[in-house]
Image (cartoon, rainbow over all chains, first blue to last red; front, side):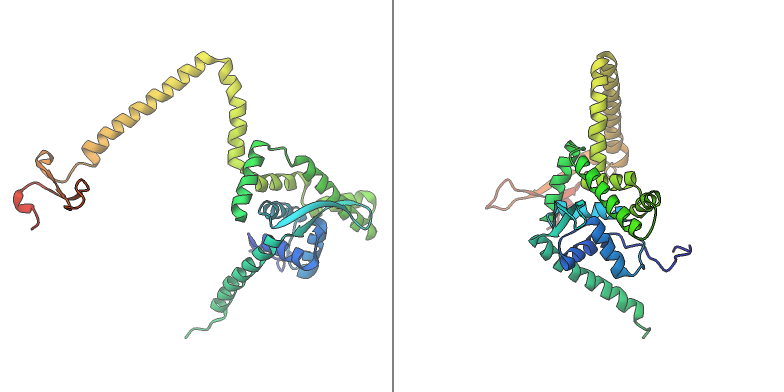
Length: 117
Length: 162
């Protein structure tokens, strides 16, 4: 465990970032990497450590799987940015992954909170 | 399904490693300018904003490396790059190449031959006193001749199961 000053901030579990990005895109619609990072940080209320650059491998993995799709568009401040949108197979994958995550997280939770019998 | 698709794209990126490099550079530049806008709105100077943006991203080169590792298959890409580098130098010095290949081939062949022998004679020898006397007993089904199963190795007729 980290013992530095921001010990209350956690690193993301490996493998969960893809699910988080997919879920974010399903919730807020088409968005660029900066927007996704901003949204994740807002939802997490500064409780995670996120180098925004680590989103890029997740975005590549999701795009190569055909779960998201990137297109170049213009932001409201007239900057160009690559916007990602979740695809139909991405929506299906999100449902499966979320169910899997809830099952395994629920199991760990039960084990942690169960009292000795 | 997604896994197969991803494998295909990763293979393409092994063959053409720089295929997405320009688009990635453009995307990171755009990300940095969005971050700089954010820090400038919070009152930082242009220089400060540029530095903060890079810190929040976690380094441009590092991000590019992460992207490369995810979009391609690193060890296969390295292998392709090494081969592309090595092949011309082998072609330039054919004498050396032939000697090196022959040396390796002889070494590997000799090793394999000797190990096979040792394996047969010492490691994998049958646990009986006189292996030459062993008989292989096959059972056949009348309807399907030729498809015998090795039932047992016996050395004395009295060992045959009834």
